[in-house]
Structures are given as C-alpha cells and as structure tokens.
Amino acid sequence: MSKNSLFDPVGHESIADAVVAQIETMIVDGILKEGRKIPSERDLAEALGVSRPKLREALQTLENRDLVAVRHGEGTFIAPLTGRAMSPALLSLYARHGSAFYDYLEYRREQEAFASRLAAQRATQSDKERIAEIIDDMQKAWEEDDQDASEEADFRLHAAVADASQNTTLIHMMASIYDLTRQGVFYNRRFLRAMDGTGKALLQQHKEIAQAIIDGDPDRAEIAARHHMDFVESSFRVGQEQQAREIRAAKRRQFLA
Image 1 (cartoon, rainbow, N blue to C red):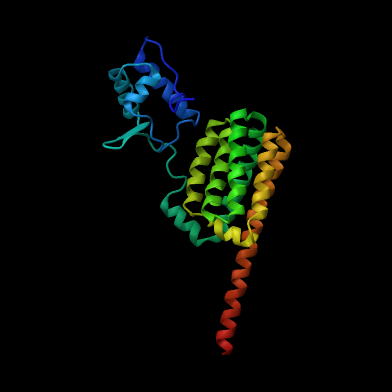
Image 2 (image 1 turned 135 degrees about the horizontal axis):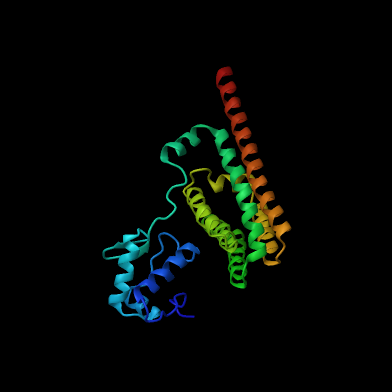
C-alpha cells in the first residue's frame, strides 16, 4: 500500500470540486484529523490523478473554508476544527474547584462506554488490527517500565476506540477531550499509575476493552469501559484523601514540634 493510497483518483468532471469533496469527506470521517500534514502538492496530485493547477484550485477552496492551513516552508495541514472544549477561564476554574473534576470523569465514563459499545458493533478488521497493535505496544511499554510509551499508547488506544465507533461527531468531540487530557489539564496519568502501583490494573482494563471490541461483544465492551473509568475515579479519590491525610499529619507534627 503506497503512502498516499488513502486518496482515490478522481474523474475529469469538475475536477477541483471532486478533490474538495473527497478531502472534506475524509475530514468529516475523521481520517484526516486536525494538525495532520497532507502530502506534498506533487505527491497529492499524483495520488488523485489530477493536474497541479486543479489541485491548487481545490486547496485554495479548502483554505477559504478554513479547513486547511498553508504554512509556508512547511506544507499544508488540516486546520484546527473542534477548537478548545473549554475556555482557559473555565479550565482555570476547574483547577480551583476539585468537584468539577469528577463531572469531567462522569462525562468521560458515558462517552467512553458509548464509544466502546459502538466500536464493538462497527469496528472493521483494520480497526481491530490497529487496536491489537496498540495493546501490544502497551504490553511492551509495561514490561520495559517505559512510562512515556505507556502514556502515549493510552491516548492512542482511546482515540482508536473512538475512531472505531464510526460516529463522526463522537470522533471529533472526543479528540478535543483527549487533547486536554494529553496536556495534563484534568489529571496527570503518572499520578494514576502511581496509585495503581505498577500500572498492571490499567493494562488489564485496556486489554479487556480491546478484546471485547475485537470479539464484537458490545455489552462486554461497554461494561469494561465503565469499569475502567470507575477505577480512574476511585483511584483519584483515594489519592486525594491520602494527600489530605498527609497534609494534616504534617501540620500536626509541626504544631507539636
């Protein structure tokens, strides 16, 4: 499979419009995601089977629609599409009010469960192979105690499950949420891994979600996703309670010293 095989040659009628329509469809379907660099003008024209002037016309239309952004000297990229799920002011408010964090987890629980159920019903063979490959990467990262690789695989798995749901709204909305999580806005995954001890419980939970999707079992996939998010919530509650006890103990010791 060539690197540009995801593009299909277009016919000769309304060539620029056909190119625009194909790329727009790929954006809607979550194939071309924001921030992704599209192939060079030469490679893309060859993959689509169109002339470079027609391709430039199509790219200009996409740029006018704010769907692609041209960075001079770098190339053409899919433009930011979903924006920030929350404004900086609201994110700051969340940071000051811990109870809001659990609203976020409640939202994630429902969306992850929904995505996992749909993925078990709709995942293609390609989706299943992608999920299986990520689980293999997770296993390797755990065995090698590579926290960076483990964290990256975690993000990739959740995104792959959302993609496998084949629900375009869910794909784009969850991509925005995952971006905030990747930035550590809501929580630091390493804190969660520390509460887990070795990260083995998290690994097993991810394996269960993945296997249920691969097996095409929507009920099991949904339950596994809910169990995973319940574990995340309970772990953070335990961690916060432990931190509060340590702070109180330190204050008592200082007062009695």
